[in-house]
Length: 128
Image (cartoon, rainbow, N blue to C red; front, side):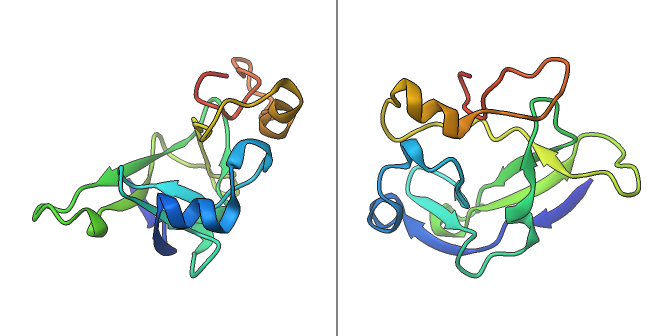
């Protein structure tokens, strides 16, 4: 079931680097890559979707909707459920983050996962 649209300001990768620098040591981000050209900055004009936490066993997923007319600036990210959500249950997605550059070991602590799921991979990064 479709829950909500991930909203925020559309920016290019270059603008994201200009705003936030290299993301290898942040440990938190509200940037969502929509395609190769555009990201959504949920910190600027974003909605509550930016507060959905990571889990290695999520109950939701982010689905990229591609503009049928080929305008990559209009591509969207929808948050959809993977199963029925119980009342009061936290919404989660698997961030599967990819860093702009290789992180050194101490920086990886910023991306540590604490979801507590039995199959937790220990990281919010795609290759944990």
